[in-house]
Amino acid sequence: MGVYFTYYLLDNEGFTENFCQNQDKPEMHCDGKCKLADVASENEKNNDFNFEKFATDFNWITHENFSYSIFLKQQNTQHKFYHRNPYWEKIHFAIFHPPIFV
Image (cartoon, helix red, strand yellow):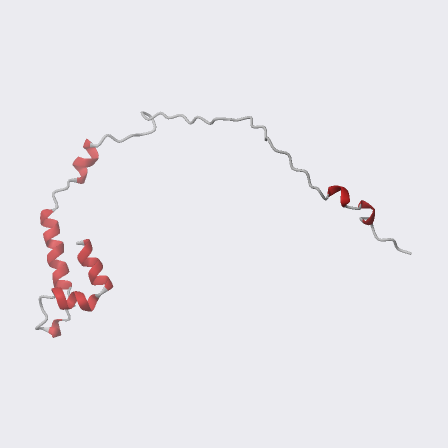
């Protein structure tokens, strides 16, 4: 069903040319919806999935019977590098002063 519907949405004209059962009756303005209806009815006939049975048979995991723990490894890392700015001594801090007003 999904492939047919996607093809119908993306290329309606191509879908109508390839799959429309009423091409000889353009006054019906079917535009391929007849094929979509057939595929949908086939899908409903072949659908043997019972959601209620699935929901009761499936073992749902809830927070009461599901325990977990998160282990966070804390590391006391000491960095093994040292960066020294080679231009630090060349900065003249004497020029950084507030302006002098006369």
